[in-house]
Amino acid sequence: MTSPRPPRLPDGWTVRPDPRTWRVDGGATWIGGSPPRVLRLSAAARSRLDGPELVVTDATTAALARLLADAGVAHPDPARAPRAPGPGEVTVVVPVRDRPAELERLLTAVVATAPGLGGIVVVDDGSGDPAATGAVVARHGGRVVRHRSSRGPSAARNTGARASTTPVVAFLDSDVVPEPGWLTTLLGHLGDPAVGAVAPRITAWAAPDAGEDAVSRYERRRSSLDLGARPAPVTARSRVAYVPSAALVVRRSAFGEGFREDMPVAEDVDLVWRLAAAGWRLRYEPAARVAHEHRAGVRAWLERKAFYGTGAAPLARQHPRRVPPVALAPWTAAAMTLLGVQRRWSVAAAGAVTVLATARLARGLRKPDEPWVSVGDGSRRRGSPATGRRRRRFAVTGPVPLALVLAPWGLGGAAWQAAGALTRHWWPAAVVGAIVSRRVRRALVLAAVVEGLADWLRFRDPSAGPLDALAHVAAHRADDLAYGAGLWWGAWRHRTAAPLWPDLSGKGPDG
Image (cartoon, rainbow, N blue to C red; front, top):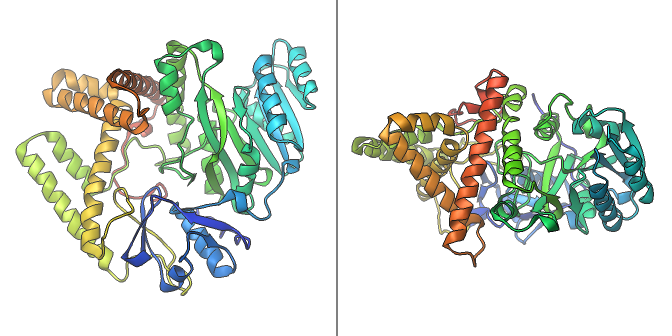
């Protein structure tokens, strides 16, 4: 499906380069985004990027800003967005069932943090005590729409959207609390007429009476709903592949038929991918924050993780090639397979494959007919996928040094994916293999320990000690075990192996 050409960005729209975008060759080559891309900018484009930001003033700067933002190497500044809708153009929709105390907490925060709203619609999804829900909503000037029996949160959100008349709908679950400035920040992104939905950062917190334990500490760092501190476009198989419906702002014109009511889980992922397929842009904006009350207690927490895992199978059937456990280029897949054999000859062969891939990458980077991006001179405007991660401050000039940096990072990224899949998506099969094979057992233990410690280093409290590392690794492995169990159960129930099958084509989800 070919997306329509997005509308032109308005004058005054501002984008700033991502701090992790690596610019080499005097700014002619940009490496960044997710999935990583190599962009070659024309002289005309570089002349517009002399300062710390790019402000749209004409058609050329509008095209350049659009390209950089879509690639994820630069991000819009929502605080300086022209033509953004105001709170009066927004209806907050809340699906709820028998949670009057949480609803009271939420609506109090909504009224305090987003004054002048166009409306509040609470959909009572079959509560046992609808009068209690109605009393809370009445105190905050909202309106109640009731389902006589529970139809699920997706149906409740759709009912609320249909009951709204404003051009923008903000969905909030009853177990969240928005922080000051959340709505204004998100609405800034809707100053871009191509953006159909935008989501805040959802941080985890526990109720005051829940106490502090390993689950609470882990969730604060590693919540499934917390997508990190860096803004991003929302794209399948990228760093921010989806945004949760616990807090989501959507244009009514983009919403269409809304959430799939036959999907009790992953309905938010399905919605944003359908919006993207229809040509809408989607943004994740961590400057807007909404706190989410996570499950208290180990059992409830693990059940929720397993529940999330069951959503992979219906997603894989609805959106082929968008949810593989591993997505690798053929050369990285070959190198990882050879390393997994754990023989001297196979390690040497993996090194040879990496050398050949590096040479091929260097040759491709110097080809004049490669799909480098040029803006302002009427030539090509596509980006070529880059292999591996990216960094900023290296004196790299020319295709060979660049390939020598990118290819090993590509192999490192492949190892990270493989370790994560082995301990999360594939762990039932890996455990069976470990029983009969010493090599599989060694690989599984190594992946579990090294990936767990690396995850702790990435998210740890700098003042934490060794015991915190052990608790984090244990919680991380429990998270993976629960998710993987749910994934396999969902795959069996839906009679599909699609969410377990790796993609080794090296291509994007659209081929």
